[in-house]
Image (cartoon, rainbow, N blue to C red; front, side, top):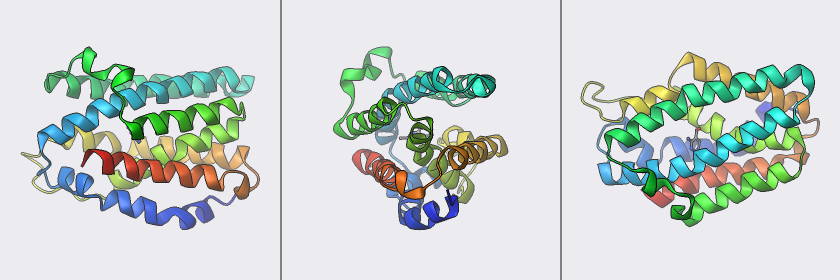
Length: 206
Ligand SMILES: Cc1ncc(CO)c(N)n1
């Protein structure tokens, strides 16, 4: 699969996310904390499904890749999830607030999208269903320009995605997608749908 072609077809969604009011306000430090909280709550719910998909990937992967997917899960738990846990705690967000039944309609759609891909049992499709998530956040991290670094309360969020290690993980994820998916048309719709959900996720909390 030609991954650049997939990007070209969907770059408007990448840009929409990067230029999204919610994201711009994080980078310039002006986002209202209430909106940040709402986003983090929804994202914690989303990320628990995202983690479940990673666990399934270990089960579904070929023997020679199991170690790799186990490492990916560990990395997710030690990096992104740990940082998020700290952010939730610092903002006084409790376990009760991140229960699955608190999911808004976009979070629910995103979860349903991931579960549908999971149901296909096709590792290429499952990897592609995770791809907009990884790739768009990596794009935001790479391209976003931080204003007022010192007093910007959103620096920990930004730093999760604005780093070499995260970019490396995304690169490897992309390599797996290209290895597992031969024909772009098999996943074009799935990928576009995921990109749209990323935009909708920010729209819903802005
Ligand atoms: C909705 C969403 N997309 C992507 C990421 C990056 O993992 C995230 N945390 N949340």
